[in-house]
Amino acid sequence: MIKVKYGIFSDIHSNLEALCAVLDDMVSQGVTHPICLGDIVGYNASPRECLRLVRELNCPVIKGNHDEMVADLGDARNFNALAGEGIAFSKKRLTNADKAYLSGLPMNLRISNFTVVHSSLDEPTKWNYITTDLEAESSFIYQNTQLCFCGHTHVAKVFAKSNGVRELPKADKLELKKGVRYLVNVGAVGQPRDRDWRASYVTYTPGASLIEYRRLPYDIELTKRRIRGSGLPEPLAVRIGMGA
Image 1 (cartoon, helix red, strand yellow):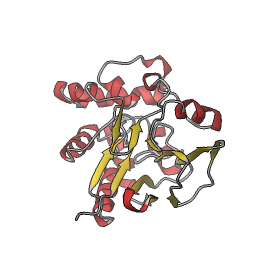
Image 2: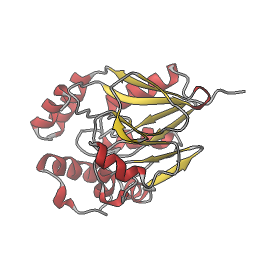
Image 3: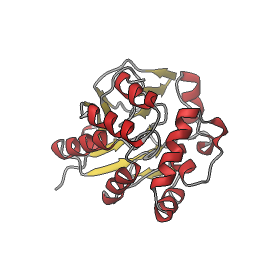
Image 4: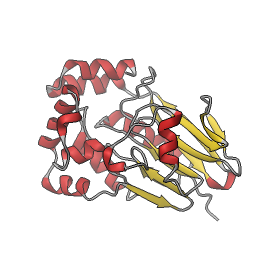
């Protein structure tokens, strides 16, 4: 019998080198079922290549807010100037078929015994950020499974709900306990914002009730050269090196 192991990743943001590092690591970790939580495009210089790799996985994919904007479905007023530059760049490099694929992605899914969403189960189309216990509580109201994975903030976090909601201390491994619900932010592949530039994703082994965070170095200098060579703003090259 094949041991089921999920590899759950989010916020690639057109960073080809970081995505390749994650996909290679999934192979080495024995991942059998990859899942993408969205924001494949935006910010960095390789949207077409990243989208192709994700589609080749033939895995569940959730829509992110940058995916929605690149597909011409969203309101750009809440995006800052750098994000807008990345969205415009991705729009120019994707085909109409690529944009149609992005526009057709679901906002959330139930997979086996857990749920996945890009931002929050609380009105996912509004792209709410979950950074505090109170914000997590709003999402837990709509969480009908013990476990939910999300992204969007680019910062890995775990919230637990039993008697109240609390953020758990940062750890590389999490063993799920009966009677406790969990909201797990997997961090970002292509643009972490926790002052650690390395790509972030998680593996989940249901048979062992175990979640493991993975942080991976990649050829970040090549990513920076791609950004600069593409004509994207210099601050985008600087910030990925800072993990900000």
